[in-house]
Image 1 (cartoon, rainbow, N blue to C red):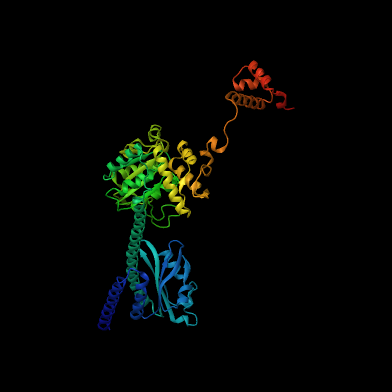
Image 2: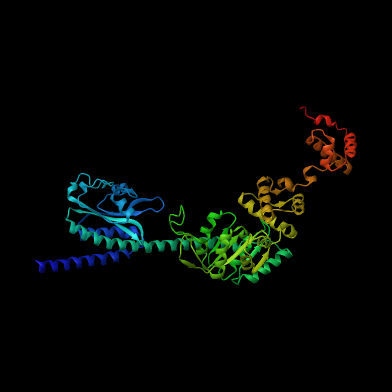
Length: 520
């Protein structure tokens, strides 16, 4: 008997190896897992006397198990095959990461038959085997088969074989995940480059011919071709991001990613994960590994806007990236190296922050290698009309209008205003004016009240200077008497005058203090 068993075992092992080899070939034929899993299950059916087989994968976002491929099930039955973690045999296998054997499904209450594929059959004739599909320690799904009722030894042997097949499936899933992630990164990078390249050649990139802007252009030209860290400074709304764009797209990294991060717009609990990424389970809500902005910018440029708002913890990590070009994801211990050029911008006084211990001095010196100062719009008088004309063209095209000119009174208002909101405020004002225009002309009355002059708004001050001063003095005295409830002595102390002067002013303006008294 032993001599007969040996050739039988050899024959079975040869068949298994042949099947595994064919499965490996099938798994290499396509990057779409759905294209290859169906042929794999068909091959298993032929070689293993399998009645039905399924590959169920875990949706990492919803936590639901769904059938990805099946043999012996209709489309409707496949659709019904959904499980939560821990639900049924399949849910338990994925939850525990351990295989399960059901020798007789008619005797197992936890066998749910959610698909309904065994209804109307004699369940005593069916055994069920389910093994986990793992990537490292992570269970991503399960491989299960139905077969005719068999003895324990035979079922254990099939568990071993299914375990090998599930490992091959897991490797295929890993390769496809990496391929899909790389493809998504390339698509995102391509879209980002296309959008930014449009800006690169668009006249709206940076507009201005003033002497101060010519100096800025010279600095951009000098620093673009290097890898030096640049600190762009200036008030809010001056166009710091446009300067960062110009530096990146005129550098050797111009064809690589340009990643922008607004450090002030992200809460402290999120900014570290956004910049450096996180590992799965690093914190509540971290359902999967996520790459940070520095990884996405590898080979290109990262622009940290409002860098002065970074927390001390993130400042330490940023300093390390600047010095060592490496970091770890949140919750991880694997050191990641990146080749990233860092551009930063701020409207805050970093020197003052550093002096008061709110910004690291060593980080400040590393960021301030090549500073560029953007002047406020009020110092770029000759550029105001250039910018206004550009914005008129931009917004009239967007609104489907044909604005032909800006009226002379409107030009006077634009040129005499001090523009505390800089270019951004000018852009918003022109957009409003274009919307309000009904005759293809931007008039003075289309501009916001903050830009209106006294003549244009009909609010020219009437009366002499002395009359205006007298009116102001009378209002101040009445307000002081009101606050002191008619007490002239207290009102005089509030205004910093003597009681005698207060009495003379009350008499001069005909004010009756008694009207401000309150009865107890």
